[in-house]
Length: 310
Image 1 (cartoon, rainbow, N blue to C red):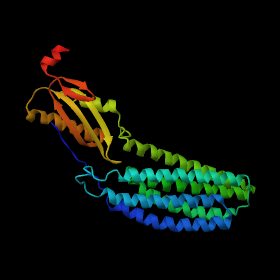
Image 2 (spheres, rainbow, N blue to C red):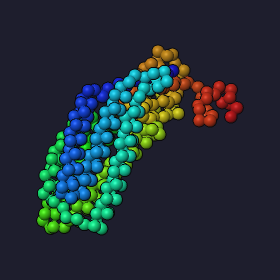
Image 3 (tube, one colour):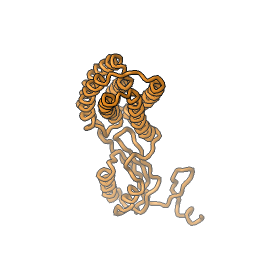
Image 4 (tube, rainbow, N blue to C red):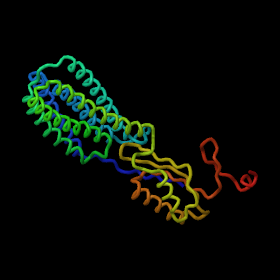
C-alpha cells in the first residue's frame, strides 16, 4: 500500500514584498558606501560596499527563486520547482565566499601600505547601515526557515554586524590614530562573511545530495515508527528534502496479514507521528506481511518455501 501526502509550500506575498523593498534600499546604500568609502579612504567601507552588492544580488536571486518555486508541477518535473530556492541559496553562498576572499586580498594589500582614514565618515555611514540592514534582517528572519530566505537573511544579518564593527573601528581610529585598524576590521568582516557562506553551502549541498534533513534524527524516527501499534518491522527507510522546508519519507513496514480497512488505522497513526514529531508530510509507505530479503539494495518478498530453504 502506498500513500502520498503533499505538504503545502506557499511562501506568500510577504517575503516577496520584503525582498523587493530590500532590493531598492540595498542598492541605494551600496552607492552611498562606495562614495563615502572613496572620500574617507576607508577599505572597511569599500569592503562593506562589496558585501552589500553581493547582498543585492542575493536578494534578487532569492526573489526570482520565490516566483520559480511557485510554478506548478509538470509531467517532466513531478516535484515542481521546489529546489529553485535551494539552488538560489547555493549561488548566494558561493558569492559570499568569493566576496570574503576579495576582502582578505584587499585588506592584506592595505596592511603593507597603510593610508590615513577619515574615521568620522566611517562611523556615520556605518550607523546608517546598521539601521537599514537590521530592519531588513528582522523582516526576513520571520521567514528564515526557508533556506532561500535564510541565505538572504544571513547576508543582511552579517551586514548589520559588520557595519556595527565598523562603527567601533572608527571610534578606535579616532582614539588612537592607528589607520591599520581599518584593515584589521576588513579581515574580521571577511571572516564573518566566509563563515555564513560556508554554513549555507553545507545545508544546500545536503539537500541537493538528498541527505537527512537537518534536525531529523533517524534513530528516533525509526523508533517512533516501530513503536506504532501493529507495526512488526521497519526497513528500507529513507528521508530527504524536496525543498528547504518540504521533507519526504519512503519506507517498507511489516504488519500482520490484515484487511486494508484494519491497516488504515496503522497508516493514519504513522502519518500523524511523522507530521507532529518530524514535520514530514510527503510520504510513500509500503505495507508488507511476508518475510523480506535484501537483493541489490531492494527489498524482495520471500515466500514461505524460500524462507525455509535459507
